[in-house]
Amino acid sequence: DAAGAAMAGVLRENAETRLRELYLGATGMGPTAASGFAALLRSNLSLEKLDLRLFPALGGPPGVALAEALRENAETKLRELNLQITDMGAAAREAFEALQRTRPQIVVKLDS
Image (tube, rainbow, N blue to C red; front, side):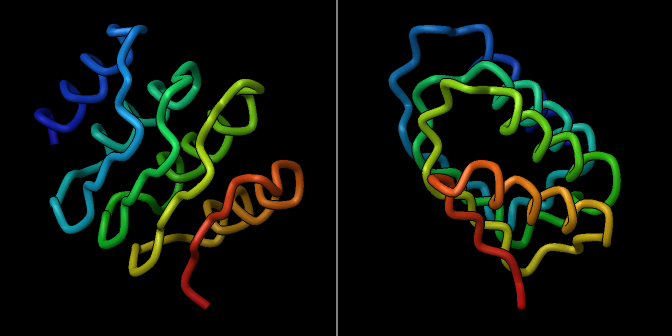
């Protein structure tokens, strides 16, 4: 979990990163990493695809923070966010569904 948060921090601090796709599914990262990625997405301008499937820590506040970060970043280039097979709580699901309504250019893949 700390390693995931550190990775997100390094990416956030490197404003000139050209990283366009990041696959972190099934890594077992926890809520600290999820919060780190929320902070990253609040300002990131390069990521186009983020895959967090099988990311167990997206229920509750970390998931809501991730959705809010994307809603706040008016210049995000993110076009695909895979959140399938996560332990998503009702509040996080609602936040991502609201994100899809306000930012239809971002395809959010949720479980049915």
